[in-house]
Image 1 (tube, rainbow, N blue to C red):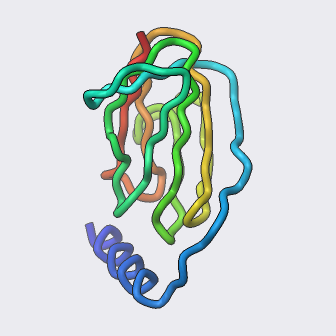
Image 2 (image 1 turned 180 degrees about the vertical axis):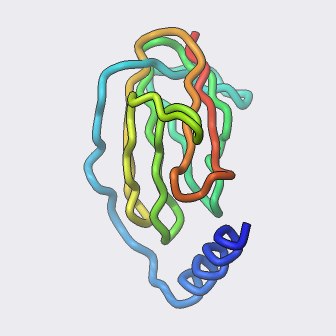
Length: 131
């Protein structure tokens, strides 16, 4: 918990002194699963999850098989998008998003429930349900 508050303090300090970072790094695409939006949105061939203030938004997403999901880091701090559970990674993907504007994409091709988390901030967890 101390680490969380320390990171929040660093994030707040950076927000006060940092200029916006423009542009995005090219997406890294990995074949393997499929996604569709859950939080009240219709399924489509691509969906976006934003990482902002130490949260995945939305934290739960429902998508159709074959959907590409892209995570975009909107925090000034490094996060990861790591598949599986904090206690046990499943090896599907593990992408470092080093700072603001960095992104990672993964195509969910098989139905199922896919959990993921940030390896640096154990309270950050999410789930993709693929139909």
